[in-house]
Amino acid sequence: MNAGYMSFWIMSILFILIATGWKPYIAPDLSSWFLKVLIGIGMLALLNIPLWWSPSTGHVQVMLHATIGLLLLVSIPAFKATKDFAYIGYLMLCTLMIAAIWGFTRKIYSYDPVFYLMDPSWDAPLLAGMFCGAFTAQFKQQCGLLIWGAVLGEAFNSALQAGGYLAHIGSLAWWDSFWIAIAAARIFSLLFKTIRLSISKLNHMLLHIRGGRSS
Image 1: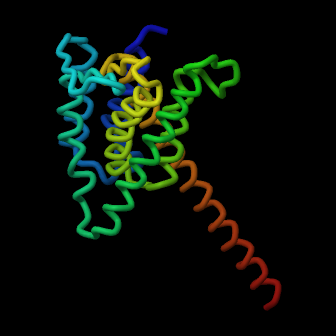
Image 2: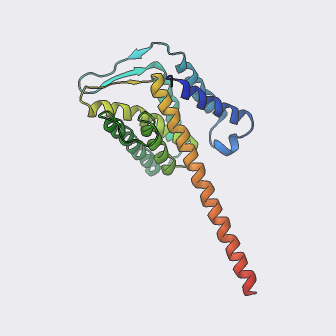
């Protein structure tokens, strides 16, 4: 599969769902402005304009694309949405955990990915997205966690490989992984919410039946 195809496919689905009135169900806490900017940055990245910057040398070999700077800047409000500093600390801890999951999975698969769940290039974002969906159910916070987690995770992978891996953060392949993680987080949280509501309704029905029999 060509790099960038998965990004275009997921962004197209997201745009269609929002345009057809599904926003209250899939992204109720996201403003239209944030969604437009997020998809706009993603579409800009698909142009594959060679605007790269290397912020570090040594063991951590990282190349950052210009779109990543915009993405990190846009994600800051996701952490400032609450004034509870304890919860902000929790979100930061979750970000580091997602980065660790991303980096360690990439590192393990850098040897010889014989055993994998879906695809060697998909498993890291899938796992990161699933854990992100478990950490928080709010889409805005999921975006913030995965933006920083994906960036730090690739840098962490480069650090683990001690200069043997040059992380191109913002490449088409990176964007594919990012959007896969976003989709996994949203699907997991919505699925968990559906299961929880189903169990709650089932318990309510059972209590109603028992109450009817006892009367």
